[in-house]
Image (cartoon, rainbow, N blue to C red):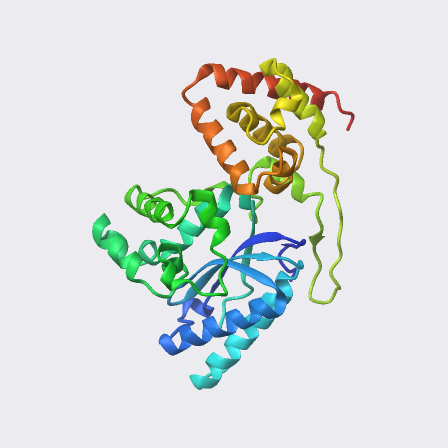
Length: 333
């Protein structure tokens, strides 16, 4: 039987989930959960994997990670073997603990990391009988649940050194804002981000999927060594995108690249560079005067909110995007 596709490249983000064999429990007590976390922390350090969020349920777990070295398979193989061995030894059992291979979904972190962290942290009340309780009681249960990364996101005193909180918190504006973000998601029962899943394994927009095609894709079977193939994605040069925006707004290009320039114009540039030039938010930030990825994320977020209520701003965006799409239509395939 062929193995499921694995997409691996340096810096990739993943949502990982692993369920117990025949949906049986993978944690029988708190000793199991504690050992799981100890082994997880050791594996993260060994394979230089960054953990942003986790949640332990009775018969499965969720991880939100980034692989600096494109080594997801090695990391998960070592970690799952170690925990299975410990669990079997301490509970006098043998055989498989998990139901097949773990599931790993490639994530467009710029657009989904924040939302996925909330999805994981709310899993405790969403995937249990607690889901039938009113909002206030569910919120109390969420805050009291210790077997997830949420405590460190809500309170600085609960921070642990094997989780990177900064990236997610920077996307929403700190712990107080993250607490409100969590409460709002629970109160309004927000949709699962996995409704946007592409091709069964990628959580990102069409532009992200196109960019992924230019990275290495791991395929193969249990008998074969991994093979790789690179596919070229169509992109528009950043300078052309910047020129389209400047032309649409009737301003000088240099004004778009000044660190404290026009926020609306820079938001339009940021959004179009992200969509059409295959640039990450970090790369966009370097172009726009050396700002960081969180500042770029805010520019894009504020632009979307303003376009929803301001037809003039939406018109400027549409004019610049039309020029870019016209350029794309003239590219020979």
